[in-house]
Image 1 (tube, helix red, strand yellow):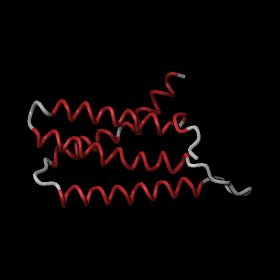
Image 2: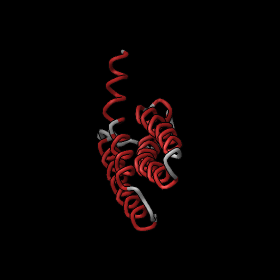
Image 3: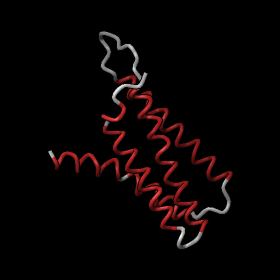
Length: 125
């Protein structure tokens, strides 16, 4: 069903984001639990839609002869944005107290992985 999931560049980014989320939130436990939870939730709101795109794009489906696969990419991205909005709404309606500065700081920092990791991979080759 899912083919070559570990070979996808998205896989490397999602794994790096997840590990960074765990390390950052664990390090914020030194400050307090609210900060650590805010960091963890900010990271998960970033990582979970990435996992969705990874699974959606890796799922084997028959390709049309004239198709370019653009529909798969657009479908994955549309689902990612929808899932991101849903997760933001859930976090901000269900989680109190929350440190929004830490939440958005971790979320934004992890988004930079999408820019930085491909450049590092390119520089290695």
